[in-house]
Image (cartoon, rainbow, N blue to C red):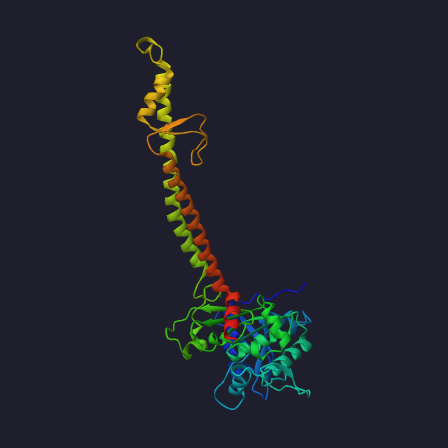
Length: 401
């Protein structure tokens, strides 16, 4: 039975950071991540276009494969390197051509009217995205993994997202990836808009970060875009670097969210206990006071009607008792009252305006329901912010287009 690989956000990040080191482009190279997990490089790519990527597996799987205990890897992770501004390996040009200008990855162009069209001549595309896909195909041919997981930072994240779009057995987590939506084919753009990749790709970025976040405004995000915590307070290019992510992971390896839905829910639950308990207490007091008042008046009526017609009260009739109670408690109500603990079976007299008190009870009940609904909306909003409100992203896209 094929097993899946449960990578943490921190492990994805560690691999996306490690691929920046030239020394890992070496088959058999061991990689030890900060969380204690161990990995081994089983393949790598270093192309003339500047694409650099590595395929890794857990150390235990690597040793089992070498010992002949397994014949194939169930799971392989491909990490792609991000932009390098030094040297002449094509990274900066790739960012400008495919991402900043929306150049088509697979040989399509834009005509003067802005409509997509295919080139009349079949041109074999030659860029890092195509190289990444070829590397993915090589890994599949050599090792036949059931699942491929991808990761990368910056341009490496964009390359990883492209692999998710092009391969059904692939999913992953990226960091500060620019949006390549406009560089996809029309069919792939349609698939992105349909939400096909929402469960297979997450990109983590910082609020205000100029590449990983602002780039998302150029089209529908590929998968989900999630905002994470950072120690940087400024909104500038510094928030794009890998160092701004490395210290912001929870003990379980999950990334720290800027808006943590779990924290919001805890706060909301505290608010619910405070406000709702107070309202419930006030409403309960109203019911108790009314029950007590009704009981006392009923006891008075029972006592005096029991004496009517006897001894010194022989000239007193039951209606005299009713008249006396009515003069003292002029407010009368009959039938069922919703906030009573029971249903009245006869006319009742009160020392207060019971209809007005009933309205107060209803107002308190409505206020309680409103607060509960409002607190629920806060939780839902936090979850949507954490998971990326895709409808909001579509609205932004439609506005910009």
